[in-house]
Length: 244
Picture: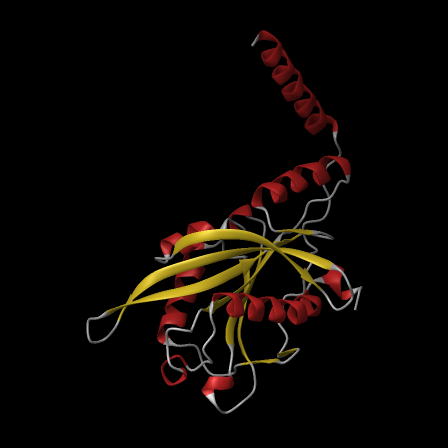
């Protein structure tokens, strides 16, 4: 126990010395992403319809919670086609931090506050057309929706996200924090983190006339989201744009 305590004190002392004598971190103004989402991403096109009342209320709450200098970009994407039974729909969001680090956080906190329950978390790899690999975190989520007639309907969805720094990305919030500390000391870089995410519902329990989408089971929904990310990420994430 004594040896462990001594080692811990030595590590703390070394950390304090590094922070004390390291040069002032630069950067922080230049994000690793463009502050926009494209109108077209592969076979998906952006929906230009105005947001629903629920979507507008959700955006309002986000603006109230997040620091004023946070940049938030949102788009809904769907595959073309008149018939709902052939159509997919997904929601993409890009959050870019300002000077306040509270802009970037663990999505589990917000999802829980919105009434979602996380049933599983899986790290996945998305292979870009260029061959580059993007690591993302897939959260399987569910909640019970109250219908107008008073009945309760279980809703399942997948929420896939990752963090993007100046020239790197990670699906882990712990790794993001460690990379921030490492690069601040060793590279003199202060990352301005961004937080992209894509969300879509599992629709196999609903008719296309009700959901406005084709029936997709759990695995098909994940594959659809990853397909969108494969086309979408290189359009705004700078380190992937260089590999196009």
